Length: 246
Image (cartoon, rainbow, N blue to C red; front, side, top):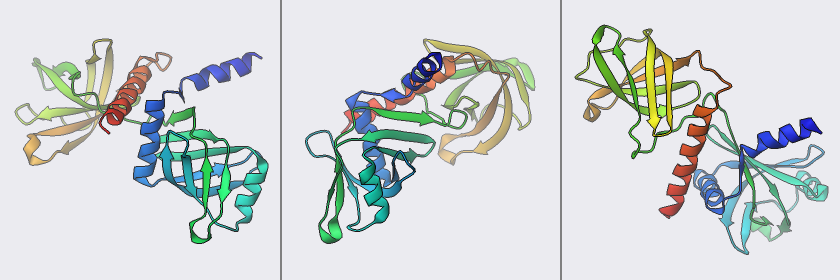
């Protein structure tokens, strides 16, 4: 059916099959001690904590209780989906081969290591910090001094806005000011003309010698997925770099 194909294509944007990326995401869940909700097809649910995640025969291990009607109903359902959150990212994956290992105060749920994880982002709110090697900038004329061309460093990016670094040797730009013509150069493949509205001006720690400008992107063409692609790729590269450092 066309609708089913469209839904599957949409999910492809969020599907992660790289073992390196999956391992990095699960490690973040472990480090953050994020709660994981296990759900069944008929509304059964059980909230737990992941204890271990090993990409080998040991697989995943979650905390559990010896006697819990919710857990028993979930295990009987035969289909279990795990959902957890990392700030503005929702992670979802199927649990296969779930076994309830009972042992008094140390009962556990063991499951196979997931081969596919879905990562859903709250698109308007999710922000990424550009990679240090790319040095992205926003280029525009100072609104109070049109003869002054600025190239401000981009601190972070979301689909709804950007944060810029304003050095203390540049005249201040006040909140409420609209920048009608701005060129965002994020990397070699991602540049766009945008309109900015300055919403927040925040002093950063004294050593930085500058301020943070919180800006909204106005009049964006949401059918253009250039920015979403940049955000997704930057996040993937950061996850891969974090995995390489282990």
